[in-house]
Amino acid sequence: MKTRKSLLALLAAAALSSAGAAYAGPPVAITFKHVGATGTPDAVYTIITANETSTYANASPKPATPIQAGTSNSYQVQSLISPDANFANVRYKIGSKECVFTTTYVNMLVGGGVKVPSWNKTATPSGGAVCTANITSTNIATHAWSVEFTMR
Image (cartoon, rainbow, N blue to C red; front, side, top):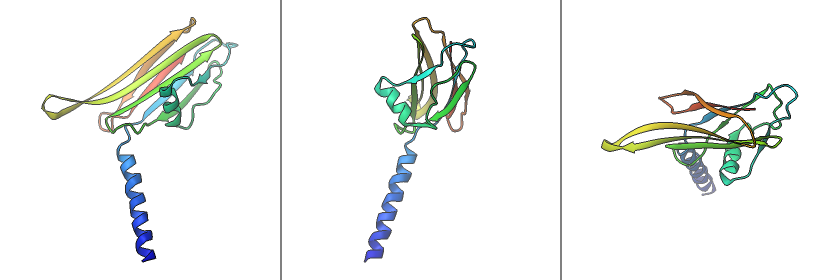
């Protein structure tokens, strides 16, 4: 009887973990580049909003901080929202300058039961910052994508 219960518990745990993986959206590979001049203060990864907290929780490895001028940091984010969605929302500060970057993926159902993937990105500067966001690649088979965020 103990063996049967143990086997049942093991099977239930395996089913739950595989179900969780099945609902994960495609991963986004993020590269943040501090393109400020030599001697510019370091860029600091900062968390303020709930979406930024979620992004940090789903990042692997965790984003490095601080980032020195002329260097970069790369990590991957994969949320468990749905197999048809993923996002990353990150914020970096250099002194009083700030950039908020967002990238999203949605596999939207359109007429006829067809799903169409869509990848987006934004960069919102404040305090005199110069921010750019570029999607550098998309994989049409897996829907994974890569994005590069730059700040000066």
